[in-house]
Length: 76
Image (tube, rainbow, N blue to C red; front, side):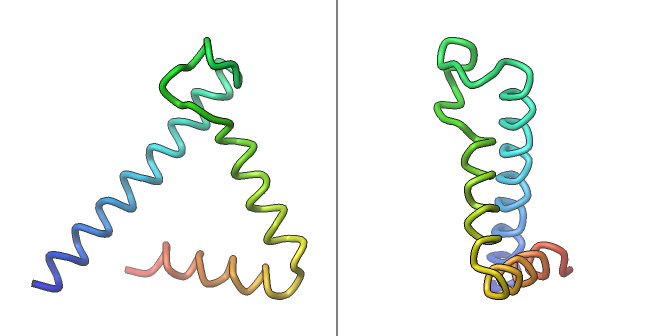
């Protein structure tokens, strides 16, 4: 039962990452205007940039957070 739950969570995470990647590509192509891409509904690149800047401004704690996130996404 737990294996099924974990597998489902992994698949949902992969789908979410794919959607974020798609949103970034669409925003690069069409820009941030609401008229150009109505289904995105926000500034995806700006949000990602602010998250990275926030992690970077916290020095070692931000670096540790990035390491933990990387480890979570790359483990099998």
